Length: 130
Image (cartoon, rainbow, N blue to C red):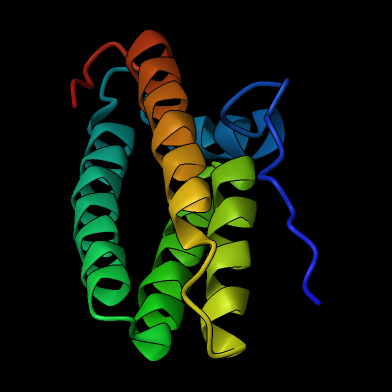
């Protein structure tokens, strides 16, 4: 008998303050292109991973779910989207266990958290637009 676990809701900031501050330290005072490019790459990576997760769910492919969730977890952790990374890790574990259910609820939570991440980046990095 499996126990249903609902995705946790992030009550804090979408971006880990320490990680984001570290990224900003890498920025030239007059040129924020590094962070803009980093988050631009993240947007692309997110889209590719979510498309892969959707394909895995549609075809009941736990290995595909594991792979794309793992990639999303790493990309999210790299930009400081720690909560999103932890949600993706749950999907990864589902795939590792040979399951793709109940992934839909977790994918919805990831999509909601992604909106929070991008909104926060757009607010904090003036040159960035998703």
